[in-house]
Image (cartoon, rainbow, N blue to C red; front, top):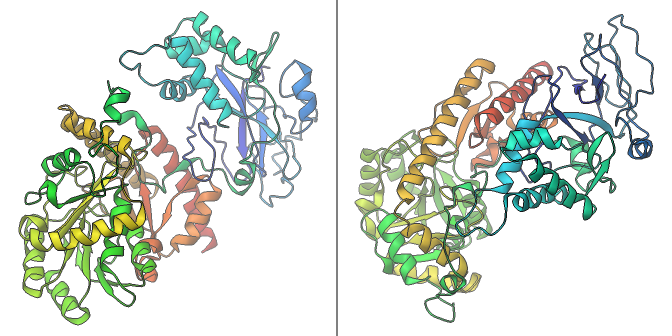
Length: 582
């Protein structure tokens, strides 16, 4: 039987087969469920508590889980069967070191020792091709690299970045060529180039393998639990939203002023932000350009807070804002509200009681995805005007909502600070944000900016100018918002089907969903979910009173639908485990 028909059996139950993209604690890892098929690629994993079994034969045959040097030098099948089949009596087999029992339906299992290399995760060629195509990217205007060179660069990046582990068997030239829509000669040329630089070993009659080079540096994280899908980070997954650019080096160096030191930012960029990214009432002279929205939040805290000050926040809010407030010695006071925002009467009472430095809100809420109503924004502005309070709005998600998003600044610009960035509509790697404020506050923000980093990168600002000038930008942002809405709806349907006990409200915007897990501690569930391969955010980090969100988690739905479906399957397994423990 061909070793290409192998699967990975989880001793905790089930027999999932995955497509692997990226493994690492801080980087999203993508593994998609796949049905048994002959056109598979073999990759490696360090997963104690998992065992490899062959599929396709009568009852399956065992796969060796050791003797790595012999596999590398044999020049034959990567999975020699060195142990006899176990009895087919249906008796569960215990994996040493795991304390968990195998499914009775899978009797033919090799028992690996703790920490051993277990070979044989199976990858579909078509899904592997998706990952490669993403790395290749779309050909840019004036692209000088051939398709073969772009394929070589993509494969080299996957190997050198640790996405493909040592001993991974690459797809056949024919299969990958068909999946990518390239000629077989193009793929053969890329494989040959990888072989010439020592990244790939071509074994006669067996295929091309990633050359062994020792254990991956991320093996410790895999032993703690491989991140199969990362739903903890509500981010744009990659740089594919960036349009083709025709910028020259001279364009990127066209700084204003020429020395590149503009604490408030390039005046052309500030004019574009005022025209396209802020509520009416703000001009270029009100804006300070920042290195992302997080720096804008930090600068507001730096400029306005002193130890012992208080700020008013919604019962759940953005953790980065809480961290900035705490860093400068302030206290965050939660004010009751609903899905439309602050309760105006509660806000008035809190302002009178605490005399806050400012009240912070998210018109498109993070983590809940709720959207402020126009009536509520007007009512909050009226309360702030009557009580002499300053409002700070984080509008980073405002372009990713089901309709226009209201702002208190439309009614009270003289007492409202608005901030935002390009990270959620374009790419998080472009660290470019802004904060708009009344003159008295803006002066303090510029002073804080100069204390922090003097000025933003000129290169980032010139790229942002190009992006905001692009007449196609509104269409691209709307298309991304529509994509997110479709992914949200798919994710919601999957949660309803697999996890009906969970309580949540369909978000109106943003990239995440806020769910309550009745009777289960969110932080405990996060740890359990990670063991099953999915990362989520505990609700407690989003609340100034952590106990108030103890049974909640935040889930990003920014990933493609197949990844979200796999994530829900993993979450469902983690939920069953959590309910048994409770």
